Length: 252
Image 1 (spheres, rainbow, N blue to C red):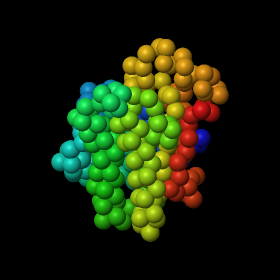
Image 2: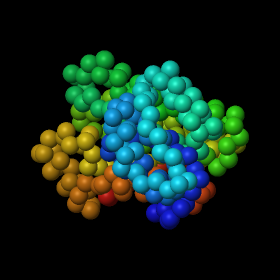
Image 3: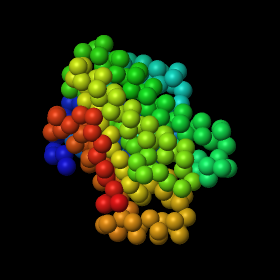
Image 4: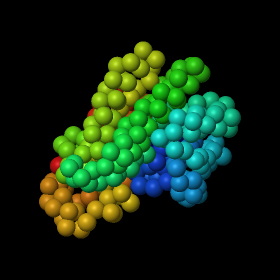
């Protein structure tokens, strides 16, 4: 969706960058000219992502260890970013997420809390920390893209915690958009359907077969197909798209 060089000179910060949608997004943002900070709790995964990204003389891609569930880790990530680049990123992609699946009647309180803490509160804390820096530094044309899920829109058996967290991400996006418009910070949300990632690899084959039948295009999506939409939302081509949720579902 984004043409060559649509993000030239931009600095992007991507959480969950060690695999799946986050990794694909890093590659696509870099292809469009951005320098990329690939942040992940698994630092080796982040390093692997950066090692696969081609770079020009105008780009600087950096792996960064980040636990979005810890406020201190997020603050350290911002500090490291400012020390390395002397400015905060103008593109933030909140892709970090976990699952702890079980039926509602059997789900432990710990598994519920862990998913909410990473998927929802983590997204909130990253937005709050980095947006304050964006405003303080007078960065113009910033764009925040959050990753929700069809589970948050329709619910999903065995995923009460994940569904609740992703529904919260969508609500968080719409509220942030209302508050951040005056600062020129656009906030949008991408809602992927079933995408072939390490997270969905853990889904039993019989469940995948049932899900595919509900998808109009008859297949799972690719991480790159989500990354292309994220790149569009990060660019000036989407300059009047704000507070939106973009479905990338193959027609569920």
